[in-house]
Amino acid sequence: MAAGRAHDKVVKLLLAAKSSADATDFDGSTPLHCAAKSGCEVVEALLAASPTLLDVADEEGCTALVHAVKRQHEAIVDHLLTFKPKNLEAAANGMNVLHHAMHRRIQRRIHMDAARDEA
Image (cartoon, one colour):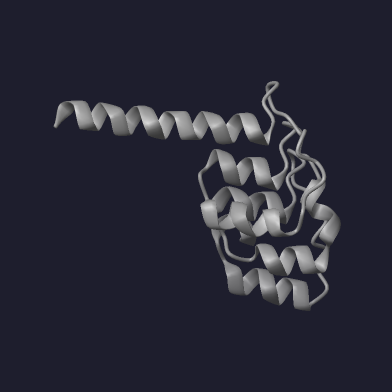
């Protein structure tokens, strides 16, 4: 999918040509999931085309927000949160978006502490 490869212009052209923003691939990922995974900046255009995508979970149980958090795409996370997602409980392996956010924060903290100890 173009969104997964950060082809912003292609995604916008496809949306302008009335391509479905709700289409899913083999694992239930929508273009919004792919954009969130890759850090693609077309999130706003995709949500404008289909606002219901915000709370759709893929086969892993992850929403686009979970994928953006897991990959630490902070700008995408911030943007998705402005749309006020309702499905914050979507979970993969029993971890929802808040679990993933805390896990990433802890990982970052451990790396910072280890670097400080080495200095």
